Image (tube, rainbow over all chains, first blue to last red; front, side, top):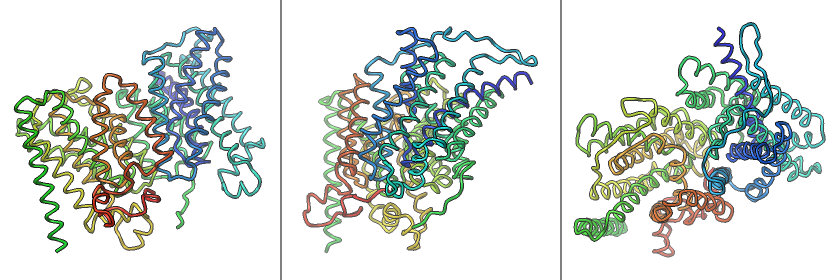
Amino acid sequence: MEQFIQQLVNGISIGSIYALIALGYTMVYGIVKLINFAHGDVFMVGAFIGFYSITIFHLGFFPALLISMAACAIFGVLIERIAYKPLRNATRIAALITAIGVSLFIEYGTIYVRGAQLESYPDDIVPLKNFDIFGVTISGKSILILAVSICLMIVLQFIVHKTKIGKAMRAVSHDMDAARLMGINVNNTISATFAIGSALAGAAGVVFGMYYTKIEPLMGIIPGLKAFVAAVFGGIGIIPGAMTGGLILGVIEALVSAVGGSLWRDAVAFVVLILILIFRPAGLLGKNVREKV
Amino acid sequence: MNLLKKAKGFWGTIVLVVIFSVVTQLLINGGTLNSFYVNTLFSIGINIILAASLHLIIGVTGQFSIGHAGFLAVGAYASAIITMKLGLPFPVAILAGGAAAAIAGLIIGIPTLRLRGDYLAIATLGFGEIVKIVFLNIDYIGGASGMTVTHLTTWPWLIACVVITIVVIVNFTNSTHGRACISIRENEIAADAMGINTTFYKVMAFIIGAFFAGVAGALHAHNFYIIQPPNFGFLKSFDILILVVIGGLGSMSGAVIAAIALTIISTFLSSYPEVRMVIYSLVLIVMMLFRPQGLMGSKEITSFLKLGKAAKGGVHNDGKNTVA
């Protein structure tokens, strides 16, 4: 029982990292209908920026988090402006292939620049105690991850529902042409979406690095794919869906490792994906939309 | 008359291929081609089969599958089990590799091909990863350390498989069934409305593509002495995908030319793997930005030779609105 609760807590903390990445996927997909394969690599870049600002500039955890978020926001906008914007009217497949290309370019560009070796996050960035609740030990890191993710999600909800840019984002995702006719600057709105999504991925990168301590240039692939699974699971394009999807996926994975299938952990996410695509393609919170000719 | 001409062209090509392969075999036996060139030649042949099989799925039927390395892995492992564990001859292994991959294609195709575009891409990607993880966890075939395989792939087997693959896929594309597949690529809803059983044809194209990927897997396994699950990951799928995309979505000759050219290029870049991937990804991005239909579009090489005559297979609008 104790073991079970511990795994549940682990699952929730890794799940909230997936949720943070999934939010970027889901927002971008909601607006431009593009699976941004490079999103997992923005996450990796965020982890490295956080790492370098902690080890080289001796910053604390929170300044490093903010710097990484800001840098990733700029990076995300650059990717969008250079690679995706010229393809806005191209076929979906062309955009998808470009996204794969950008992803590989970031991964192997990073390896080319700094080599493929591992880096490890320093262990003592934040002084954390482990908590004992009813005999169950819960690590302080898990609590910190959960707190950071929940704060960011609240901020995101605030931006999307209470600010002008959030209103513009919702309008563009609903109907891009109508939004343009209403005087919304669609290009800036799309860039803002990429900026916010990438900032969340950057934050997830720093948090991931702190939790798992090991980072390397190809670390973004698997969490990126799993976060995409989480986004599809919750219903792609729906922000609360990405959060629930991420948390549920994290918990499922933790439970599978708990029953002894840790080698199969990575396969579980994809099995979940294929099952959800077959039985409920619109996702948990999505509505079925009839296709019109 | 026309039929006779076509038959002549076909047999003429076959004769040329036979002469080419006999000459190559003599050069290999005589030692004029050293092992480096022979290896490159074998890689080219395997890549041509892979590119042709993926061309049938992506280029002709318009189903964007990025888990092709999964079929390659299934074929490689199935054939390796046949020769190494059961001790059966190599031709049986080739067929078994193809058949196993085709069955995998059937199993994965029926549920996932109901999905479209992006979702299909992700589902096939997931399939490729699942195959890799499954092979990693089976001890019978060596798990993570892989499986050693004896070298059985010879030049005659290789060239025969390449020729059969190309002939079957080209003939399929030009048949009634192939036209049904092309109509699915052009507009799935319209094809459905015209009475084409779209699911049936999508699964059929998927199975044929998977079969030949499995054959390539058998040749691959018996050429490289060792097979390991990590070699069949997403990057391998991407390597195959780039052949089809650069050659031109919907062009068989484009896929073959891209397979030959890129294999040669990557052999020369093999000492700098990062540089190779950086160049590949840049080429992919630049290609999509400036020439999204690929080098050949949906044209075949024959359409350049016989000016004025339309080529078989594929539409004639330069692929402007081909893939969904």
